[in-house]
Length: 241
Image (cartoon, rainbow, N blue to C red; front, side):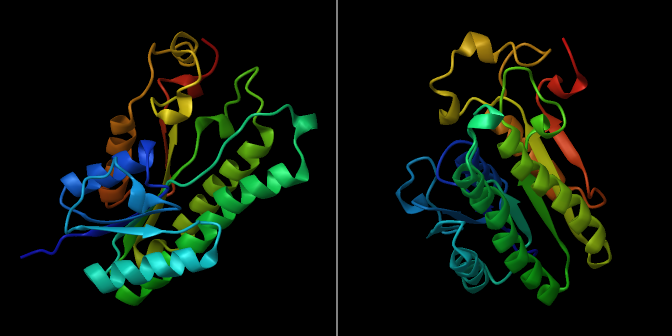
């Protein structure tokens, strides 16, 4: 009998992260979910196939604790979803060095800490695996009036690293991809007017968290797809509309 595969999901306490935890669980995966206060989340369904690990992704010891939990509880790691991230807008001249350090610590350093620990474990297992990270189409396709230059420096860093890691570990069958959501109906958008958000893509509407889950699961399970970015943005990356 084939064992359940195990996935680690960061930034899992709410929104897309919680939807990812529930989505993978419903598909039969063991799930190790982490965020600063994930154990207090009311959005994740409890289960014997779920482990919750509190910790800040900025702290390198969090990734060690998460990987140790996955191996001790479920004996292997088959997939990682780097979902944790922060995002805020400012005119370029108003960004401070502290802003950049805050963005970089979570978005880039957190990615590095967790991905390094997971790759080490996947190499020990010798069975390959999948890493999918959440970025954004705005890295390559800015929208006028959306001033996010420093945030995009960090998200673009994740995309660049992912493509290079896809090549570096192709022979070990560790696949590395990214999913780039546009506007998604999550608590992050609660203060923004819905009618305005609906105009930010040529296909009218706002993506659901479940659409992002479907994209991440596809890349996690696609055996010969690596180094790709899958845009889930209603066509916004295509250009002016």
